[in-house]
Length: 306
Ligand SMILES: [Fe+2]
Image (cartoon, rainbow, N blue to C red; front, side, top):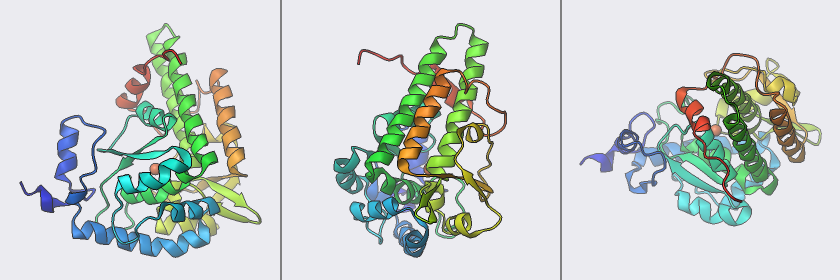
């Protein structure tokens, strides 16, 4: 078996291909498989991000980075990250083989687990990120999970997804049930995108980033806050849930939250809207829920006792 030297590169990882072929979503992190090149890629990504984080990242992200005592020189072990993370907010990073269907992903958040990609991008293409990798998930997301209010936002968001799945069970007509679930997934995915992935926040007189898509991109982090071409508007729920987005270029439109408490309140509002049926007819366009997303909601277990 040559897998020992094959590495865990996003574009080429036999271990991951095997797990996916076996239908395994949650996996272990086979740390011994990272190649020297994989570690070198982590080191380079981390080193060049550090000055940008100091300049553009939300203060709680910076505090989270130091609380996690992450090694800048090699790919982190999830168990080491979790040893620091769990006592702070109850969250833990959980290794996955790749794509996680929408409901499963949101339900992990509700249970304070964060599905985490374990492969790392190819060192030749530090900027090109067609899909999440461990740098995005661990360096971009996890520092925010050290913050209790932010962690509670994610849990709350997972609860909203669960309520959406429960409500769908109550719709007798199958066509209508599927149509509503699709619209709800779209609304939830858009909210997640414009806050957790690409959110900006006021910090005194400044704007800073707390969204992980920005915090894991060397180019876009600066662009999001410096470029006059980016539209930046106060976070408005009615806009966010109806706004389509595209993933293959820098975001032209970003939303600004006032604080983490404000963000938490917006998730409460999102739940109210969902319960009132206001997420059942959001505007068409991306993102499109695929079959797996749809079925993950339709097959979600009904709430048991407790
Ligand atoms: Fe992400």
